[in-house]
Image 1 (tube, rainbow, N blue to C red):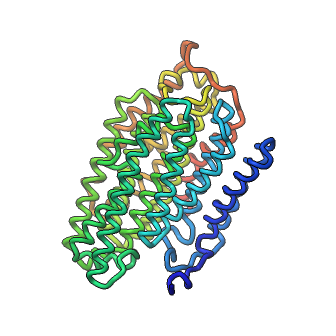
Image 2 (image 1 turned 90 degrees about the horizontal axis):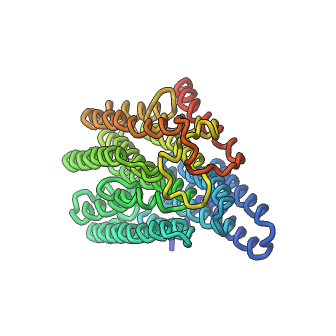
Image 3 (image 1 turned 180 degrees about the vertical axis):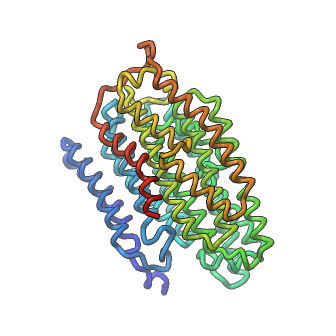
Length: 475
């Protein structure tokens, strides 16, 4: 009862804003169904209010404390992802999607749950939040339930998320058992270092980490990613690509930042080796898998796998050199921001095509884009160049930061694999660019003709170009 009484409820104020906003959206939609536009505008305002709350409301409690990224760094990021997915939703629903207000409500609840999952310093609270987010993601993946591709992606994600949730819960049970043996509550991250001598604890930590690797779409748990990306509605695919992946890496970083591997260097070196191997294999599988892809959304799925590998390089460097935690946080959030700008820009371009089912969209369908919509084509080129790591885009500076940290941690083999993976990625990213600048034959998939999202695409392109330059000039 002492823990419950001392809990500081302002620590989840921003998440409460998102949740209450979602409830109000559902109520308004039921009471005044004719004013869907105003209800959707209210949902966007609620997300903006949550971002403001993350920035200004203090976070001090037993379960949160000063977490990775400060008081609400990840909360701001995940809510920004939800906001961009909501903007994507306007295009999706104008092309034939249904139940717009309910979608915004589910998206807001999912963002709140992922924020709690990544920010929590208690395994049980993280598990409950993860399951809540998983249900929301499953529902959103099946939003186009009248399409076989959407139902298939939802079914695959349901099976995968069920396995990952089971691993997380089983790992939590092992860690809790280790805590009972030594009289310490290992559900709190701050006590994790004390459990490294227990085999039970190590097994539990491995299981919990495996569940997070599922969300990250890292090897060997990456198989679901391309299929789910392809079949899900476009706004959901974008949220999977950025929001879910970011939650996985921030959660893992949060866990390992609280473990002092210097107390047991033998275990620490083994842990770094395991993470390094997973990072290397993830980069290799992601880039080699993307080479043969001709479907746009499947290619984005394999691209996301490769980028998960780059993020794991960053995690391995943190585990090798714990003193670099400040540089790690800076590099992590910079890379996630650059990744968000580029991915959402690409999905906004994909959203320019007609119809709510974009799962069969091929690279050949982009031929003539430069003639039909020069702004969309320019956005696509800039975003793909950023993902490939071409200067002066933000993606180049993000990869540079990771390489600097890896060099500092003396992970030279991982650096070589990361550079080789980036070189390989140029091939398939530029294949997409080459298709878009082709004049085309005129029989490609038609564009929707909507220009409402062009300002957002211009803003994302500008951010991709100037974000890295401004950052390096400042620091």
